[in-house]
Figure (cartoon, rainbow, N blue to C red):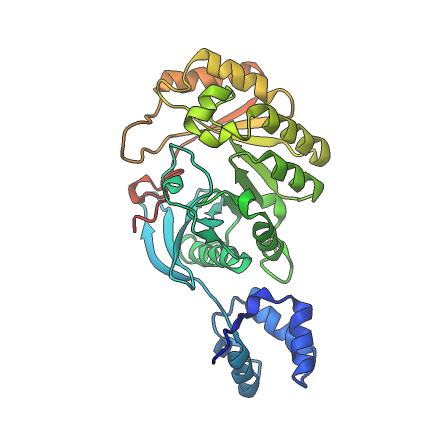
Length: 346
């Protein structure tokens, strides 16, 4: 019976070196293969041109490279690109390239579907099929970097984990992927250019602080009133705001990195003065900034973008309390690539 071949990218460099020694070859071959897999993004063993054919055939006998494949690529009128990415087992996730004048950002997925149940998000309607492996996360970034160079004439500058899935529910694999992305043996990107966005899993936020991660943290907050937040993000019942606040205080005490709150204002849900007052109080315990995000409807009309007066009220009250606030216009709406719209419609 044929044994299932192992994905070679699950091996560390040391394990690759050991494999070659065991096969009667020299350890440095492991370094060469590792470089092809991570720095040069080889899709097949055939791509590894400085390795003998015999060695490539031998690798083929033992291993596979479970590379992603960009199934479809959609381009928005505003330059945003959405990739439907097919994984080795046929499942699909989506990732997005967001260009601005000064940078290009990759929005990557960490799970197929999502573990959580935010009622305003299309991804949450897909049940979580599985976590992505580190190489599948890494490959999304490589694909977007290539598109950035091809269509925008510059390399990828930033990465946000705001695609499909809750990154902290796939913590180990997300950290391994970031390690590869930031390593000189991978893409060599600065961790300061990476943001991991969570809906707020207190235990895992504390773990990140203990692990002394170097990337930035964003929290998908949307309300600082428990009853309101639970109505739009039901899991808040298990992770209430008091627990989230304690975890974020711990994060700041350990890392000294300010927190970004992602915040959508909806009509008749969180568009009153009391909602802003609660947000201001929540922002006060640790240095933070607020990103007010334009809402992108997901068909059923239950959630509607608040009117501009409500947004103006948020901005003026936050600024009066010396809290940095930005209003973020959505990109890629015409191809369902905006925040909360990733649902594998393609």
